[in-house]
Length: 333
Image (cartoon, rainbow, N blue to C red; front, side, top):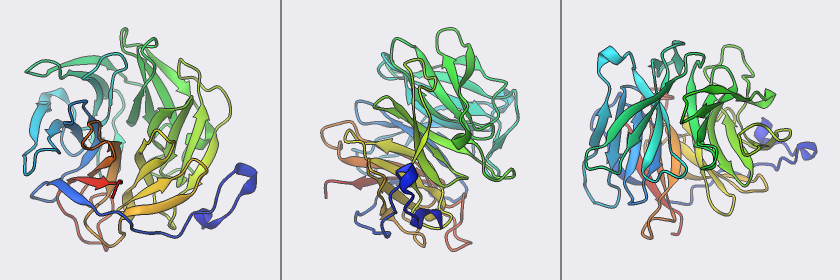
């Protein structure tokens, strides 16, 4: 089991035994099973935007308002040719303006049909959100995670979970090119559903997960998003075969990673120590978590919000699925 090894040559620290320290609070549970929240972005006012993979819809949640219902921000008609949405990120220098990915995805296989993926913009600064297309990315296979570069670049990076690379998309022109093609982003098994998955930029590095290789890694990048040096593995997953998805990084460098088939969130310290801090393999409280983000208001800055697929990625105990969830974990308690 790779997570149990101490590989000093790579600077990998042995994973700590799983623990379950923090309580999980359900912000919203979809009433019926069969839905999949894929990713989320937190607005500065505390609202949360979340994409759905099972249908091409973007929702807004109000986690600070008890018992509130989600609001549909945008749904694509069937004529658009999209079946689901994946990554979402706020654009640098454009507060409350977000980019998100739409494509013809199959949640079961996490696959897409080439030439039918596009990046869209949603402007939340108006009373009625404005949704416009930024660019089509026909060469992409499964565009998944997304992160914004600095404002001067006016661009985003997009992980491709099938091709095992990272695209750079210019928000102004719609031009895109391969920014990073690193071996650690590739699949280990040719028939695996995903390789590189979630991505975040922090401290001059692009951090990323590889869902097939079961690790959390990073690579130094230039301002334009290209690689500035070799990649390195920070940590493997705690349990045997547990997969990493999207994640959030605290200001202190600690990462909180959605651990999909483990129904948990894994904390990874800057020195690579991995510990499960919420959820449970045999519990439905975090059923197939997909992404994590920190709150942005004074009230919830110490809270992580987690989207889930309701067990569709890996049914609990092999059979149980529930409605998709938006959950919260207060790390200050």
